[in-house]
Length: 107
Image (cartoon, rainbow, N blue to C red; front, side):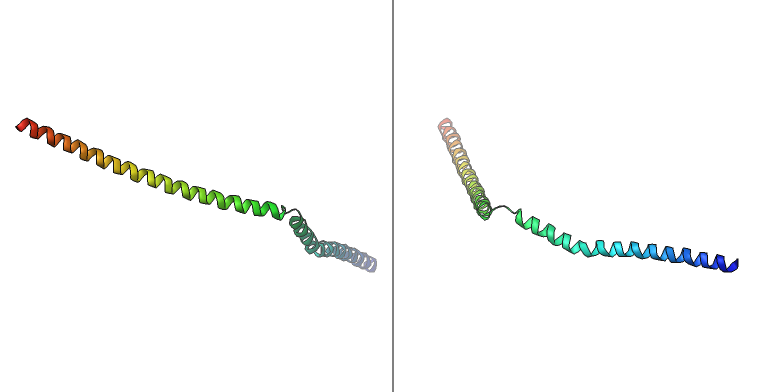
């Protein structure tokens, strides 16, 4: 009877080990497929890339927008300088008129 229990216990352990081995083999197969899946995904990403002509057009458009924005900045600075110059001239003219008016009043 003790021998029968021992054999039964060993059979259960053996079955558990075989089951664990099967699980490990399945995991090994899954892990072996991961690099293949990654390579396939990479190839798919590369093939879904936009056409080269579209990429070049995007680069040209970005360069153009950058130049336009730089030109706009230069135009704004030029306008501000003109406005400042006109303000100085206006203040000088106003000062001259006030000075002339005071001279006329004095006599």
